[in-house]
Every structure is written in C-alpha cells, then in structure tokens.
Length: 409
Image 1: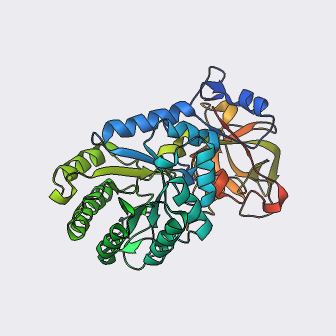
Image 2: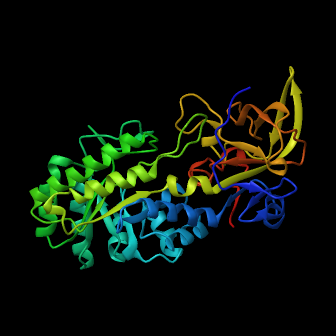
Image 3: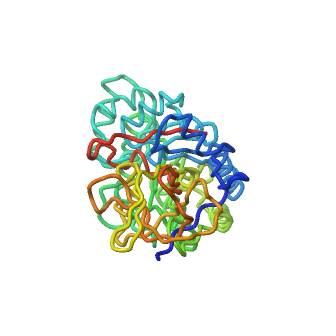
C-alpha cells in the first residue's frame, strides 16, 4: 500500500456518500454533462480561495490570475470578477481572455519567444507587455511605431536569486526568462525615452514552493531589488509584480503554505521599502494556488481485474487528461494525488487497488496501490487537485481519445 495526498479542505458528500461539487451530486453533474471523463470546477471554492488570500495579504495589494494554470473560459470569466488582473502567456490566451469579457487594460502578457503577430495584437489592444529581452523590446517599439500607438511596456527581471525549494526555478543565473537585473535600468530608460508607457517591473523567481520561510525571504529580496532598480532608473515603477511562488500540497506529508505568515511579512517588507517605491503599487501573480484545489477530475470504472493477485480498476480517463496525476509532469518519483471513490466518499477503505487509465502505456496510472473503499464497474473515481494544469496541460489527442468535458459549477 502506498499513501495518497490529502483531499483539500472544502470537499464533502451528501447523506448517501456521494461527492458534492458546488452543492450538487457528482453523479448528477456527470449525467447533465452527458459523459465522462469530466473536469468539474467549484465556483464557491474559487471565490473562497481568493477571499482568503485577500484577507491574509497587505491592504491594497493587487491579485492577478495567471490563466496558464487553467484557461477554461467560464472559469477565467469567474476569476475575472474576483481578481485585479489577468496574466497571459501567449496570443492564444490573449484571444481567450478577451473572449471571456476581460478588458485588455487589465491583461499583462509575459513569456519568452513572443511572435511578432502576438506582440502586434497585444500592443494594438492596449495590453501590458512584459518584455523578456532587449531584442523583444526593439520589436515591440518597432511594432508600436508602425501602429502609431503608445505601447504599454513592463520589464520582466531575471533576479540574481531564485526561490529556494520551488518546483520550477524562474530566476537566478542564466535563464530564458526576463532581462538580467543589471541590464534593466538602461532598458527602462530607453523605453521611457522612446515614448513608451512604462508599466513597471515583473520579478518572478520561482513557483510551486511550500517553504513558507523561503517565500518570505524571496519576497523581501524582490521588494529590495525593485527598490534598487527604481533608484537606478530614477523613476518609480507604477506596478511591481512580485510574481507568485505559492505552492499547493499534492502529495503525502506536504504542508500548505502559511499565507497569514507570508502576508504579515510582506506587509512589513512593503512598509520598509525604498523611498523610490513610495508611489508604486504591488501585485501577486498566482495561478495554481488560486485554482488547483477547486477542481476534480471524474472518470468511470469500465473494468475491474485481478492480475497476479493485484486489483486494477480500469477507467475511461487517464494521463491524456490528467498528466500530472499520472506522475509524468515534472516529478522524478511518482507519488499519488488525492483520489476517492465518488459514490463512497466518506466510506472506510477496504482494499488496495491501482487505478489505471484506458491508454496502452504503463505510464497511464492515476493511483498506485492505494487503499480505498470497494469500487465496481460503473462507479466514479474522483481525482482531486485537478483545477490547475489538468485539461490544458495534458496530451488530450494521445491515442485519439480526445479531450475531457469541463464544467464550472
């Protein structure tokens, strides 16, 4: 038997033991959608998550949603009512954000390798472009001149430090992301001299960190770096985007970030900030932390089989929809996401099983030797932590099975 991650707070069942999503029975939501596999996102949990973050963070701190975590249009539209800005990472996400009803004035565009047509669309729409290099700055200024508009440009900074313990390091040393910190002041002065509207600094050191102390240390260093850059430029950045970094616990023995401690420390860092930042606003840019725990992936058991004494529950889902839960998305050692039998959500476990998908590969495993209540053909399996990097980050076309359905409840 192998352990699973903990099911996040907020999930419960009705008196019959059926998992509830948005107050509705999971099996009824599947019937309404018409099929499985199905991603369900609980709107009330999303709302509560943003509210909890605001309550913990300094007054006046802006919250941005990084929609790469989950670009499902109804979810993005819901998040837009809760946050202060939307951060995108491609021209495709720009199109989706605008289609969801978000004003380009509230959108910022980061990411290396922006194509000219993407820069053209963003600049023409009035989106803030977070420049990743001097070459990208040259192209943005040229495109803006061709359009005859004033571009809204920020500079993404590659800091000399990274976020300790982060799952993905976005800063420190040579990186494809951002402009090296010592080159930023000259670039900003050139943008201002060229007539661009300088929108500020974007400093993102890493993501998916659960070490509260490391997050506090990195945020303090980020505020200090922004102060030094502002002093060197001679102009206060209108906005300092502090990035994200707050991780979520997927696996056994992982502990959630203490956001109250993070918020208290950030408030102290902002109080102590350099005079050059006295008029600057600050923002956190979060994706996974805001949406991961509000999603669940439902698939149906289509076969129950015994092989050499081991029980396998074979489902109609798999890694083509939930690549991360299969252990094939950035993890070195495979560990189990939280998983439950949806119709027996609070029942006592009875047997050790492996939950596998429908693909012809041994990599397609959603639960490895886990202890669950008895489950049979036709029952629904619920895989939690499915609100971020699920449907859009998985190879849905693999073996021709196609994408899962998605619903915001």
